[in-house]
Length: 120
Image (tube, rainbow, N blue to C red; front, top):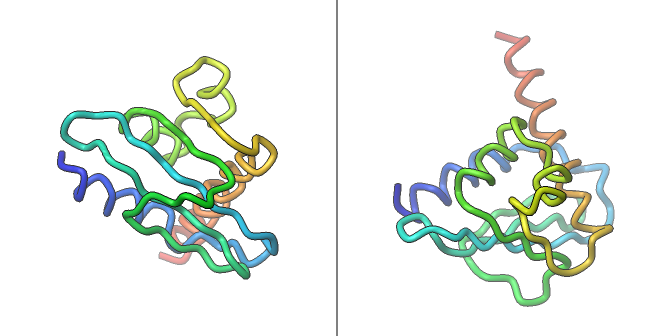
């Protein structure tokens, strides 16, 4: 899997999450450690709107460093990000309080997916 493939897969997993109740500004950079799929991208919540872009974000609140496999499991809800951090599968730099908000974004996306599945 190339970085572009991985990025667009992750973007699809994050986009559509209802973050309208998050009023504060959150900016997370993800540094993916992998020879083929490695690279950086960011997730930003601003004014209740979520953006995912394939760039580094220097004015970030937190930086997450992990392998593509770990981030995929976190994004799919198969791995708790707090557990991943505690077991050192996920490294976090920056504001840990804001970094914990990542879990809210993932849970919001999972709720949206469940709601969509029930409508079908």
